[in-house]
Image (tube, rainbow, N blue to C red):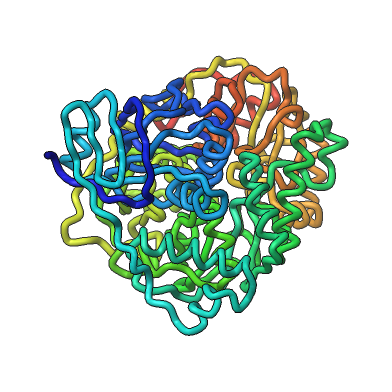
Length: 558
């Protein structure tokens, strides 16, 4: 006997073990149609998860992983079981929805570290209610706590159906997730942000339309993430109806439920952005990290589907970074700050900080002399979210809670040599580029202005696309920035984002894409099948007018 297993979701499974010590983002990391790992930076790249017992520490990255997992279950491409060593919410929620709404069970277990280590070395296993048997190894199981959170009279009434079956279903899912998180009760939240409106898979549409048809209506002001098409223009853009139709239906289903058609992955740029200390319920990893870290608001990294459940009830589990103690930094990262850094420094540091702190909140020290502006912090947070599961970070002397450091926090240094290695990792594409990708997350007005300034009246030679929210585009139109970009040949697209863009809007002849986004530099190769180059906004502008991105380090790294 080695260690112990906790049953998060029960079920029977048998199959070959696929084990890895590195977490993965199911969205952007796994193709739900095939069940294969498409994250080229992950040790399991190219491996199939179908029918295998997946043994990994946890997940990271996008909140949309719950929708990817649900689709894999519904189309028969899911793992046989999910086995974690750490608390995990995103794909666990997908498995909960699969069982609760569609009658499809997928076992989810959490192991003690010694049991995880032992199982990782096995070849195959069988899982049932008593535990795991694998190659002569027996790991006994105990059921997770089933009491769930203490419910108020209003909570209980919603659970019992006083406001309809959709709200009752939402409360059942909420209570299940609260039990998984160890939340003692539910708390009120002031606003929501829906990530599940991205058409990551048919399962997202199935869930949303089922809830809408049940009469679901949001109870709190709720914005919407970027969607997968330009809502008004996808037909003219040549998007096939087989994709554009379902993507639009998905967006419309959430609007039908009362969500605001903001269609942006940067809700912190809206006038409705929350204030310090405000309890909200956002999904979309970059937005969650920015809200917690930079604005000082409070939100867990809610998985897709749970975001709607919270919006329908106005209630969220009291767990994680809603609580003071869980917002403390548990890793101090001292960063060697090169002289004269440009805007590409910030996503690079965020990307590497996530690798250094994949499972805990860090505080980054040494960055204050560089004087980061909001756009720098936006890029930092987005890149951090691709490589870490943590819902926030701190920047010493910059972010509002940077002094909150746990007494047992450890210390790690991020040296110039680490920055060089990270730069090279994100820059393995050729010098010739055919597409410039700006706006992952959605570009701000200042970023649009900066691109227009960097182009200096020159016309672009290669396709250059900026994705931005409707509100930012309206402001850019009003102050003349949009006209400047369009005169330079830049295409500015609303509604969709680089993480959801597809052909033919993504030019099919592209072989290499260049971006200023650490997030898209990581996900782009797997999502688009193209090589990616990464650099500053000015470097992207230069490549836009020349079609060429020299393979050299930026001046500040030389």
